[in-house]
Amino acid sequence: MEKRSFLAIILIFLILIFWNWLMVSRAPKEPVPGREPEIRTEEREKRRERTEVLGRAGKTLMPETLDLTSVLDTIETPLMRVILTSKGASIKSIQLKKYKDQEKRDVELIPEGQKAFTDMLIMNGTSVDLKDNVFQILKRDKNYIVYGLNIEKRLLKKEYTFNDTSYMADLSLKVEDVEKYKILVNSGLNATERDVAEELRYFAGVASTGENPEPLFKNVNSLDTTEFISPGNINWVGIKNKYFLAAIIPQKIETIEYSIKRFGKERIGGGAGCMCAMAPPTPKDPSSMRIGISLTTRARDEFCFKIYTGPLDYDKMKKMGTGLENACYFGFKWIRPISRFVLKIFLGLHKFIPNFGLVIIVFSLLMTVVFYPFTKTQHKSMMDMQRIQPKIQALRQKYKKDPQRLNKETMEIYKKHKVNPVGGCLPMIFQMPVFFALYAILQTTIAMRGATFVPHWIDDLSYRDPYYILPLLMGGMMFLQTKLQGTANTQNQQQKMMMYFMPIFMTVIFLRFPAGIVLYWCVYNMFSNIQSYLIRKKYAQIGS
Image 1: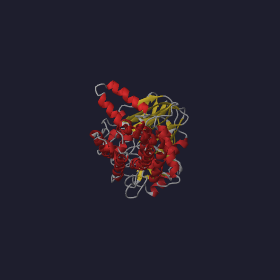
Image 2 (image 1 turned 180 degrees about the horizontal axis):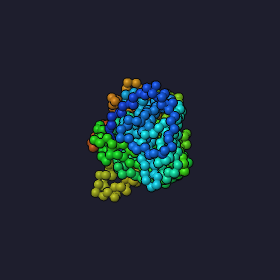
Image 3 (image 1 turned 30 degrees about the vertical axis):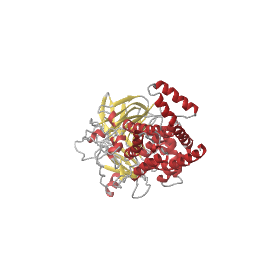
Image 4 (image 1 turned 90 degrees about the vertical axis):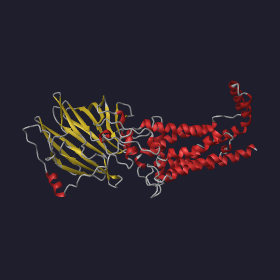
């Protein structure tokens, strides 16, 4: 491979490393939480029968010092298991049945000891936080529960309605004479993946406002314990980890402001170290990764919301029509359209090819065909450059003390022989956006989570190759490509050393990349080597 091509590869992956460090923040490793104990059948039945109506005396319930009088209730749908508590009429646990953690248990979104979807009222200029008040159950059905609380001579009703076919639920709060209502999710989200230090880089608060479809992302390191507050027309606000999202979507009510903050000050470090052999360090304070959000609204008597607690599934979320699909991570702004297009190709191929590893191989072949004109131009340019090298060397000797004359004469030779000195870099330039798009898709797309290529070897294409076989194969393909292109016989010893060093350098860089992206690059290089051999053989025959 020509020196310019090697420099192009180095530049691409240095940008990639810096991009990874810049675009995603890190967060600390936290143990996977335990599960709430099962609620006994008879106890659940008693709760379902409870239909107490609160008295008319209207006395504010003070926060409990101990959680002795609160009760738990479980709502199950085919998609999720939700455990609610009467303390704060909030959610203590959300378990997703279709997704498993590393212990093969249902993924738990809410960290142990935390509660989500708590309430704060603003009445007579005073904020009243209800997260520790014990509500009573007024009504209970299969997917429906109503909590009630007497507060300052008002009856407050909080209703949850869950759905058998969606991760979207309805939440409403009915209360009279309230100036503002704030709904909060200060629980944060759990880490759900095996490489927790890597996963927590994607923890963020995210919000969509006004007419702009692109949401604001606030990664962990960009947040402080002081709330980030933004007023205006808010479409939705949420917190996300690598694969899952908890979001609040207001329904036909006036939105005033949203806030995002985290609960620990310790900065999460690691730089670009996660790209190589070392994982980023995790902070000692586990609260440093916990992000909280709130949404402040105004309405007459009833505040209505949709709440989403589920996977970051772009296609399914887009069909909801809420804009939540924009919370999915697709890389830089200019890369996102390419990422979405590539994802559409992947999902389309997956309808006919059940194994995503085979989908990646087919996609690699397609890209080899698509980039064939640029590959052909690259090899023609490189062979033309080799043929005029003796003349270039002669010029360097003749005008070694006159750089300006040397440049002028060199350009004349390029023009005379119709040689494009940058033609060898074209495939790398056009490959870069596709590579970035693939990196984003394979790193964070829920469809790739746990996607198996070869059982007992690559059980998850979004995770690195546990035996490092693919990175070594990829390095071998790069070395073979160098040999096929015939530039390893160069008399320039520094250039020759660089050519042999590059496959080693790239192999080290790729060790911690998702297995899917390494599989793509390895297979693409294999097809490119075959293509290169045929192109150079044909071109050599024409040239002779």
